[in-house]
Length: 357
Image (tube, one colour):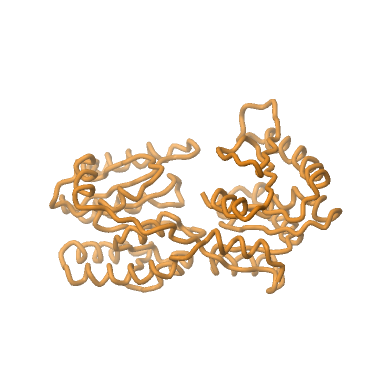
């Protein structure tokens, strides 16, 4: 998780970190202090809990800032920056806000979006620096909130390390999943929700109508939303459940991505998809939906497909499964894009946090 990677770099450089959180994080260090917002409520997703969390956090952030003389505040979202309003205004703390996804795309509820539009605007106004995960996301927020150009920086996610798998390891994973040697396996990965658009790929497998082409879906629900059962029901109703492999959630999906022949990411919207970057780091040829966020990563039209024309993806998949020269071309383009994201994200973030320019 990016937050823990950032913690590691800050702690290794001698910084002291105070974390305000709703529940204890799985990390410990002599210079890291966790301040858990206590609540008598067990449901941490309900409205009452979040109202309680907001109220307590505002005053707790002020108390922590005053007691420990906080110099800088780092948050993962403008809403959380707003909760630090008193340390920023009264104590003059320098605030860095990470923006990693478009808050308005998480829901269609007008009241919810209206609240977060106003809260995000206030959080952005309070921020000394905005750190966006992509140029596309930066452009969306710049158009929506009209913040000054000198206030932001764009730092994409990186590929943590290249992943190499031996032939025997690859064969072992494929065998464990019931995949034959002659199967052409298309992998995809992510949290199960409608935005990831996995149903689009399931329908594509149906339209391909070639038994040896199979879809490996790596992931599951983080919050129960019925998406897992919905996807399995679609596969069953289409009569292709034998060609759809649900691998479940994997803390490290890379061995499973490496066992595939191709990675396809069909998301409707994104910030900067880690699953796609991990696939590039695995040395697997990649295709992605033709949306701006994914275009920033894959760049080449040969690696993109429009969501409104399934036939384009079908043609690409058929050609990739049959034409070795075309397969190698897509592999080469994917490898070239991989190099663009091989940098030290934690080190770059440390530089952003400790620079006021």
